[in-house]
Length: 370
Image 1 (cartoon, rainbow, N blue to C red):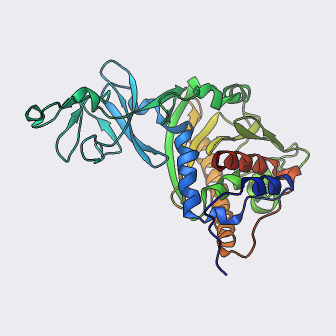
Image 2 (tube, rainbow, N blue to C red):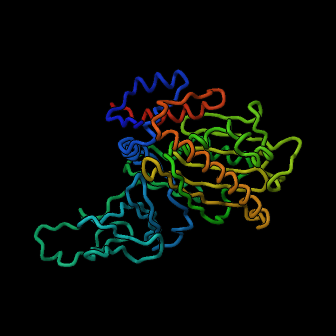
Image 3 (tube, rainbow, N blue to C red):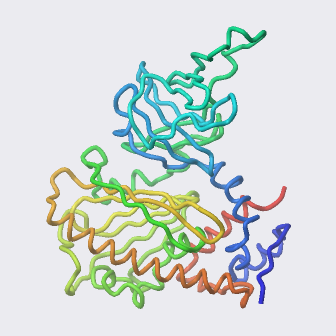
């Protein structure tokens, strides 16, 4: 049996299916054409978390990243300005900066030595003086939009996007109310991961806890994941889980006592995870990206309160790693079924999975043809 790869999107049929509690077509989870469209209309058209302010704290510092498959270099220039530049030489298209991060006085392309300032302006071109009507002022690196929230750096490819604050919505207030003071949080480490599944399957797994009692026994030991206790909310730009610590503690995977009394798990559209586990002040923050129709990459930046000791951090990370491994197994299993072509769509339980329906409506809204 072969899966059908659509060349057009029947938005009305998809919307009607969502209204019936069904999912988007499973073909959308294995189709290169859909993935390419998602890169263009979702990831290249949204604010994307790319890194931290401590990576570009001093003039000359930079780090590289991608937004919707477009290479970006984020720099701190000599005047202290923060820049997001398309990391593609205006001469012949080579990537100007090939390191992950570092410090430079300028950005010089390795191919023909075109040299750019940290603000992206073209400063030097070998033999440029031999070329008639060669205007270097028009050949700087293309600029993207850049903004920050606390220690987090975001980039949008649009030169004039809606403000980042519109995407964040009430998220800063929710974190603060839950005991997370960003000014007192310190970066600890970053964890990269790859999942052999479509990015939407990874996001949708994150968006519900219907599977938690069966698939995450360790998590269910810590949080009350019963449907009457575990709360799911859909907001204009993100979805939220609220999980309270069990009244009668079981044998938990890590010490949950502390000033953070509930779990908060947010998914900012399209794919930014913002996680707070109960216990001591902690936060993990990172994106989910498509690396192909059936592969997902991502990372989580872990932050902890400056007063949190390493023993607690180690115990919580072991707990987090276990939940993550369980999720990876689930998501990759779903991909194998989705790719088989055996079933056209899924059927949601909207009482427990309305967050998935909201996410799929977001995706459909971005992909539907005008």
